[in-house]
Length: 179
Image (cartoon, rainbow, N blue to C red; front, side, top):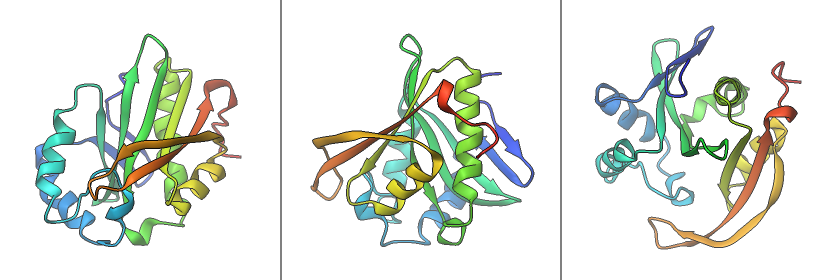
């Protein structure tokens, strides 16, 4: 098993992101135009292609198109993969609005966290814009530990200087049964 291989559980499927997913992901990302100002990079229709190309070119990322049944409903990535340290981040996650608040995120993150742990990673990080209350609540619901705030961490596509809330889950802390 490799970190970047597809994953599935029931009607949930994560496929390695490919050019063939471009148009369906663009349509999914266009379903919530108001969300993009709290993302580091915008996937809105005007910026989608440049962001897609940029993300696809990043060498230490593994990207996934997320499906519910046959419908592409989002994206998530393994980011900043550091095998020597046994650390990676899960991020750049987006779901269409109807999937939010349904338990879908837990199912996706369960697959991704289990894969990372099974591939030998000992620490999984999540970095969330301090303005993104929904994602912070989702991290707490997963059982991730809020480690602190990285002040003035990055400049987003809007020019906003973002404070980033750092969360983590250690391999020994993860409950594979979703308790």
